[in-house]
Image 1 (cartoon, one colour):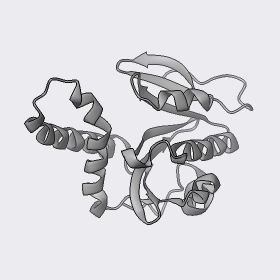
Image 2 (image 1 turned 90 degrees about the vertical axis):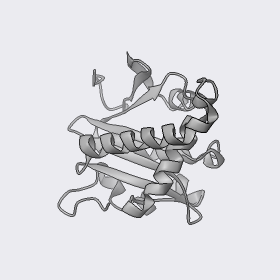
Image 3 (image 1 turned 60 degrees about the vertical axis):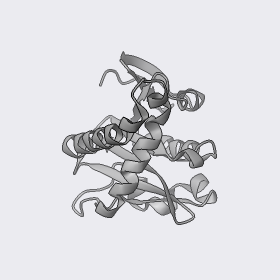
Image 4 (image 1 turned 180 degrees about the vertical axis):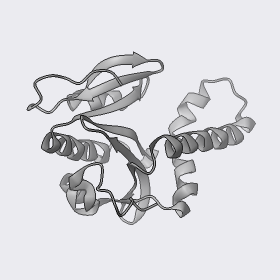
Length: 191
């Protein structure tokens, strides 16, 4: 879906997303609004983020496909009910290929990363770091906290920590992490 024509992007500098992410653009990465026809990719992307977890779950392998399809649908339904139309739902492309998604929501004090996910073959190539750095720049320009809920076992936790995100609270199995622009004297709390 295209962002609503009567609203601005969560991050003003993301109104033209393909040109705002300089470091990511150098990697051949661009963003575009998620479209209904992207749904099969979104489901496949979701499944790729859960495989390691399923390998240790004890769930019989023949049941994985149905389980992942149900979970992907539940997550997609939740995100759409809870956040649309007041959010940005982007797909991440590299070299014309879909490689991930970036979902954002904002209020007066916070830019929330609802979800950022990359296919396994696109991980550890600088894409996530470049996008997060662009979001940090956006948050600093707008005087907002950048926040994300991260599973305590997520490998990307080290990336968030390296980029200056700090754990604010625990909501098992997630940790709420905030990044505060240097200009903000008082950290935001909660959420």
